[in-house]
Image 1 (cartoon, protein in one colour):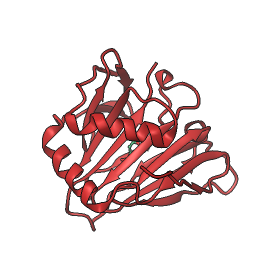
Image 2 (cartoon, rainbow, N blue to C red):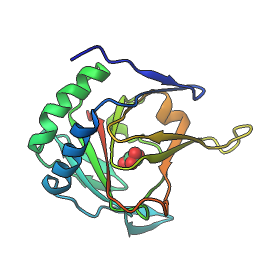
Image 3 (cartoon, helix red, strand yellow):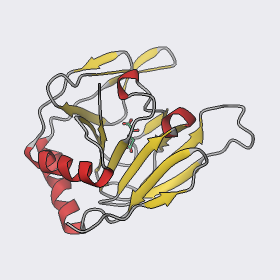
Image 4 (spheres, protein in one colour):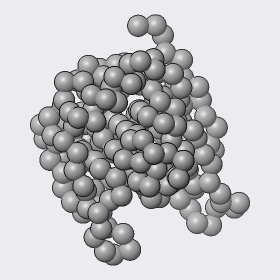
Length: 200
Ligand SMILES: O=C(O)CCC(=O)C(=O)O
């Protein structure tokens, strides 16, 4: 495998970089098809405005034994790594230069599935987590905004995440910013996102 070249993305105080064509289109196509059927997709319950509701997407928490994750007051025990993700994890680790023991897989069935504003700041991720996010399927509009409501000129910045792209979020990104995946009427096909993490 050749040397990976990260493109650094400008977002003040954050550490964000991307490799747009990290997977070749045919490999990304194969992975999307494989994961749609090999991951045991579930509806996760999340807390919103004090109420428990079904998350508007399907998800699966996958990881090494013991890598459990508490999210929205629910503890998720890891599902075992499906075949297609074992080898991929090693490649993502090599590209990012860190070890990952878990991945949150998300399936956005069409453009009406979405994810609201949040930061990946659960204590078990550590204060300055490195999170690698692989996108599969139609381009995904991914938005960031400062967490501080009183940030002067607070506004959202957006990224377009292509099929097969790998985004690396690190440093203070989670402490300073929230991110979201808005709904869109333009997408009718399923899209998958894999966020590789290290839980301690
Ligand atoms: O689909 C995405 O890229 C968002 C994933 C995410 O932020 C999460 O699941 O915590």
